[in-house]
Length: 127
Image 1: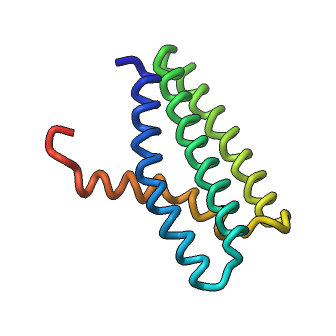
Image 2 (image 1 turned 90 degrees about the vertical axis):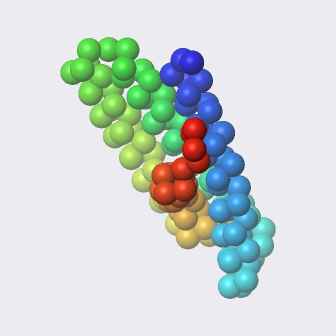
């Protein structure tokens, strides 16, 4: 199995975890009085962006392994700085755009951490 196949498989697993978390968050936002369309759009944008970041991390790691350690480290650092700056732009846009609920757009950025923690605590046998 190649590196990118592993990244795609893990991204699919991440997506399977993000769907229920996004639906739960949507229910909570609607329950607390947020406009349903605004909450849905914001959560979907945040979840898609979070998945994109996850894939970018994987692609950066796959690329870095093909080079000597010093060059691989530079590749990973450059990718980290780019993703960090991109996340900053996304957060500023979430705050400034009137049709996006900032909390609903930023909350999905934490979903991969929850999913990875959950999967490490409740790891299946043979997985």
